[in-house]
Structure formats: C-alpha cells, structure tokens
Image (cartoon, rainbow, N blue to C red; front, side, top):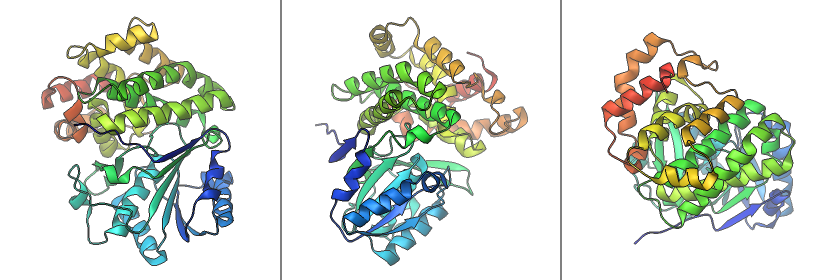
Length: 380
C-alpha cells in the first residue's frame, strides 16, 4: 500500500498571506532567516495578522543559509520558554527547514539530531503546536514536504531528515514574497524546482499521483524561470514559479529524490555551495547518466516537445548565468587541490545519502565520483 501526504490546507495566489488572520490559537513563534523578511515588511504583516486572530507572537530570526544544529537548538529553547501552539516559518528553505526541526525538539526536548536521522525515526508531533510554512523563494518546497536539511558545521555534512510528521499543517503560497528575490536567487531556487520535479518523475517510487505534478512543474519552470529572472516584477511568472515549486514539492515529498540531491547535499556541506546552484550544475550530468537506466526522460522530452532534456537544461542554465562546471562558480572558490582532497570522502557520503535510494539504476560510489569529476571540470 502507498500513501500520498500533503498539507491539510494550501492557501495560494496573491493575498494568500491573509489566511493567518483566520487561525485559532494563543501564541506563535515566527521563525525567519536574515533581514529581508523584516526589510520588506513581511514580518510586520505576519504579526499584524496574527494579532487580528488574537495570537501573541515572538520572532526568532537569524537562521543561516545552511541551518546549523546550534541554531535549531536555540530556536527550540525559545519555544520551550514561550510555549507556542503555532510555529510560523517564513522565508527561504533554510528558515522553513530549521523551524521544522526546532518544532521537533520543542515537542521532544530529550531527542538529539542523531535520534531523528534514520528515515521514519521522528516521533509524532502536534502534541504542543501546529506548523505554518510561508516560503519567500520558489524553490525548496519545504512548505509542502516531509523533508528538512540541517548542517553539522563541525563535520561539514548536510543531513537530510525525512518524516511525515514535519509536513506543515498550512502552506501559504503568496507570490508577493518571491517577487522580492534578486535575480541570482531566483535562478538558483528555480533550478532547485527543476531538480525536484525531474528527480521525482524518475524516482523508482514515482506513481500515478506524483507524475502529473512533476510534469506540470517541469513545464512551468521551462516556460517561466528565464522570464522572472529577467523581470522580477512579472507577477504572472512569479505566481507560476511559486506554484511550480509547490507542485514539485508534493511530488518529491511522497516519492523522494535522487543523485542530484545526494551530490548537492555533500558538495554543499564541503564547500558551502548554494543548494540550488549545486543542483543546477549537477542536473544535466545526472540526467545523462540516468538515461541508461530509465525511459522516463524520453517521456518528459515528448511531453515538453524537446529533443534532449540535458541540452535544454544547459541552455536554460546559460540564460540564467549558471556555469557548466563547479570550477567556474564565483560564490565560493573550489580549487582543484581542495576538490580532489575530499573527492573520495564526498563521493562515499553522497552514495550513502538517503536520496540515492530512489535514483533509477544501481549507482555506485565509483559512478558518483565520476559524476562529481565531470561536473567539476565541465565534461558534459
């Protein structure tokens, strides 16, 4: 028997943020990242709408781009002191991911990260609070998924945490928030959507419920991402990309992902590469590799009316100023010596990532190492 799980309620479209005024409760902790949600007035809006619902709120901010165990523990401590019955996460995927695990540690303070790393190990939540997720980026789909990614800064490892219990109760998909994203974040998060959709589509767990969502999401990304990258004020395109992210999230949350995310998690942990950028670079290499194991890419190519999916992705990456190779990125420097020094360890860690389990075929640590090498040097 299979199950398909999504949030109980999804409010979407312009003005969806108003849904906050309709909830019932006493206290809420708002979890967010850097200053952008404050700067653009969204935190004030959230607090005002919660106030309309007679809900007292406190803000936990400063969640970093790769949320750490230490940050999660601090947020959980605030929650234990304030005792909210709602947790409202607003911002990028990092804020949403961190808030999910803060929620777990708030409800179960005796647990450690190691306790919840095995898939399905997290105990039931909603004994103390429910969860609302409001994404500011059209990318991670953390507002819809059973996934969170937390970073161990000491070990330089990103840990994906999977539990049906962290699927939010309410997802608020308002395009006014991603409309404030700068172009390079629009590009990186948009390609994260593409990776989510395509990996869900070829997942060995894919099914008749996930496939239509993944297909529609892929089409929306190809049709809208370059447009909103060039013109961030295109609200039709923003709405389409925000919906594409959520559709892909519904799919991959239920059927998982594959090697793109396995490799992105580990190179991100080693070098601090932004997750969406890592996905964008890796995607054409892994599509090409996976084609030997599945015919579903051909089905997607037919649906989209294109000859080569990997070539279409490379073309879109070029439009978004995303390089072909990791050696050419400029947000961090990955020297050849540094890359080769960690390649074996990084490949083993990526092979052992939970996302590898649902990749088509039978990837090995050696094949993972080969893909990393191709993507570092640009050998497409």
